[in-house]
Amino acid sequence: MKSEETPFEGGPMDGRVLPVLLGITGHPPKTYRIPVPDTDGGPDTVLVYRRVPRGPGKVGLSNRWKYEYAPEGVPPRRLNWPWSKPDATPSGKPDATPPGKPDDADG
Image 1: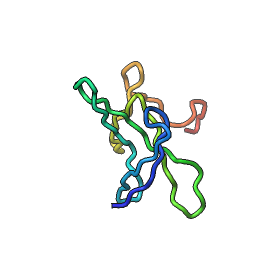
Image 2: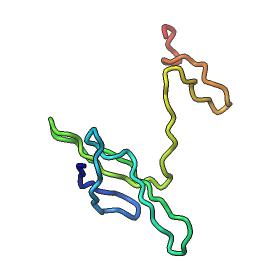
Image 3: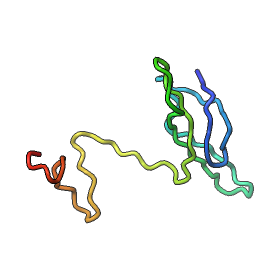
Image 4: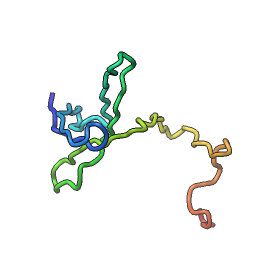
């Protein structure tokens, strides 16, 4: 398998560069989880890093990536099928407002 030297920013891994395995598309995973064992024998702590673009890439070359620390973890993913119900508003009811600008009479 192919790997790429990928820098980590923020958190305990700040400034380190690790070889990360690339997927079939040639990109590293969207999230990188690092289990850290507890010194007292308790449950492991898991550090979560999110993949972000490293910077503007050169024309014709693939984009390079880096990982940024995500102290809140990774939000759960939700499938977005065309027939899925829209997210509920704070009142708990689905948003019935049609898409577009609120002042637009033509829609």
